[in-house]
Image (cartoon, rainbow, N blue to C red; front, side, top):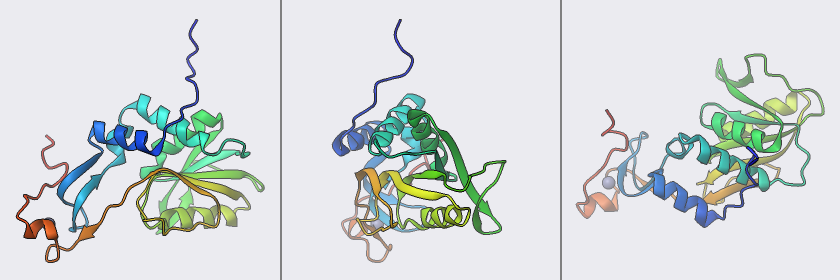
Length: 200
Ligand SMILES: [Zn+2]
């Protein structure tokens, strides 16, 4: 009888980006981002993660990056980190939790608890500035837990982010943004696309 549990995934950065491109989670063109800035790349992990089988594979691949590290549970910053933290935890066979903002600070709610000495892997979908993850690390540290690593599907920080623990993204993507005034794509007259605007 075939086992329900798939073999551990080994996805190269190239294979991860191909998967994103196939599903339309990574596009090239001329985009108006929610920040109001323009970009020639558009990245939206939720488009890939909406397929549970792909989310499971990506979670397994990310868990593989931390093989040999003792991990008691996985914590993701809401909302982006919830699904992928869950899938990494599934692959590791440990608990998955998420942190969300309460009165402005990252908090474990909903009965989620860490115990002093817990070894925690923090996982998010895209690392841009790493700000939320740094807050998560600090909150967990204050609770007596120790963060043993940070995982992400995509690092788009340009390699600038530093968490003080091993940081392992599945792939890296450079997303250069421009103000409308400084946008070279506008200057070339390439039509601007607002991702998601065609959705019903
Ligand atoms: Zn533009």
